[in-house]
Amino acid sequence: METGENSPNLIQANNFNIALSEQYHLSIQIGLTNCAFSILDTNDLSYQYFKSHNFTANSVKESADKLTAIIGKCEVLKATFSSLSVTYVGFPNTLVPLAVYDVENNKQILELNTDVFEKIGADDIHSQEAKLIYAIPESIASIIETFFPTAICNAQETILIEQYGQLQNFETQAYINIKSAKVLITIFKGKKLIFSNSFEFFTKEDLLYYTLFSFEQLKLSAETIPVVLYGDIIKEDENFKLMYDYIRNISFGVRSNSFSFPDEFNGLAEHKYFGLFSQVLCA
Image (cartoon, rainbow, N blue to C red):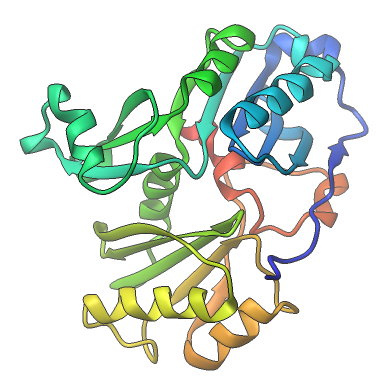
């Protein structure tokens, strides 16, 4: 399966100075086979640093061991930052309307749809009057508590839903985010979220099927609905080529205009790491 070009592993602005860390915000993105970090200068809202790691892990323990090693060896992450935020990527989650939400039922609700990990969290989706319940392994949560105890933590789905809602340009619009063989499909009607679900896929046909199936459930036409792509997909890969054959109005997303990116970031496509670069807006 092709998932797009390899993203640059390290980007650093010419004027990046870790001695100024107390005016920087650190954003962290954590998954079972990947992690990434970005640093924002809060004085001028410019991104100064980005680093990503992709790795293989055959168990949660192996994943936790590798994440601990990566974080422990990174000298930049040992600085004192003005603020920190963490998003968990690719973990089980579900949305619940705020009107019927009961914290005592978090685990039971998740168990209706998926196997769950030990640590249960719940994020406010303010724009949708909903809660997003998610589960992560205790060993992953412990890494964050050990290295970044003051960080504000969310599921990445929370960040994406909130930010997509700000991007709405059409009556109905779909957003597709791909990361590590998982696709998150999010659909809005106006400012109202009408669909959000993630699927694991192994072939380009799987990806197309889940996309068209989601549209079909809502009686939406692939001929008319605008679709915006984020994450691990590029024009040259087979995933995009097949989707382009079936979806007429398809485009790549861009970064938030709330921030500036030095020239050193030009080699990183704008639709990559949208959640990471946007999470400070929800911190």
